[in-house]
Image (cartoon, rainbow, N blue to C red; front, side, top):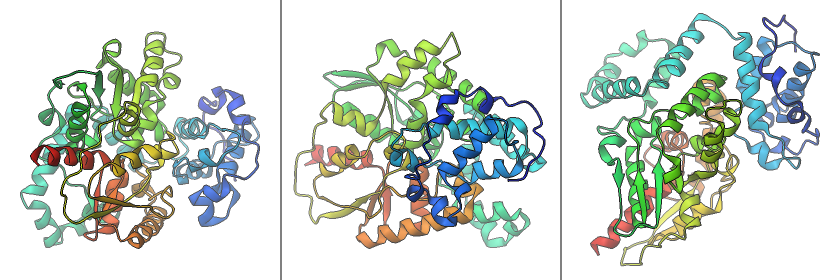
Length: 438
């Protein structure tokens, strides 16, 4: 890796607890699990290789360079290496601090990149009202037929190549967002638990029905549901893209919206968010005003499937459902690798009458979404998407269940009309509704 003068003193890799960097034994157990290493067979493209680079920089043996920055962003952050690692290396912390150091040093700076980071991280995903306003405009663009007209007219050829290629896969924004579908407080007839519901940012605009389904399932299982208004992004997008300061701000904003003392759990239904949400205490450990609350928050954040299994959720009663529907389950990286949750979503799926669950080969392999990786690294993301779709089609399933919005979009775009992608909690909510009608 070529050297270049570090623009400013190290901040993130320099201040990182050195014991975290030293955890890696260089045993190589992570290599077969890493998609980028399997693609190139280059040591630098593996978790072990990347950690060695981080350690060399922390030791002052290497400088932070453009090549180092590009390597850190070539990593998907899928965390498959954490499952494979026998030493328990905290790769997520290393990964986020390395990207933060890259941004701090400015080695990847160019005006266009700076503009898009400012627009997305500092504006859209830091200002909930602005994000919803843009969501409304995008909804109008889609439902008015303007999107069809733009594609048909050839106007897209006037747009930059990267935007032109992304436009066909633009997700469909829904007419009503979560705050319109879910009351701020909803309670069942008999209250067993009190929980807070996280609505997210992308989830709120594109999959508010999943949030509604989550609330319905919680109500069916004796949970009073509190859903604070205008929640906004949890900061996972910022943390994964090297903006830890803004991630901390988003964490504080979210903590301010929930009264933790009155809640038994904080429920999330998005794997990528959940993996980040369970580590606010690390993000805010030096913040005297928030450190204690963040530690309590970490203990109370639960994925919806994790929570339902823990409280022994009610299985829908069997009824005449007609012909069985074949389904399979794709494990979102940040649910199975990031949170260690694998069996619980399957328990939900197996409880649904008329659903035949077929196991997916390589179910834990990344689909290529990985946050915004499919935007920043479309070639590598496309290869992973193609492999995942091939595995899914082998099952013959008409339904693909997955618990992350990014995976949902990536897989649906790959499958087209050959199968429907759906969240496990939506299937459970539908089963409860059918039960009431029978």
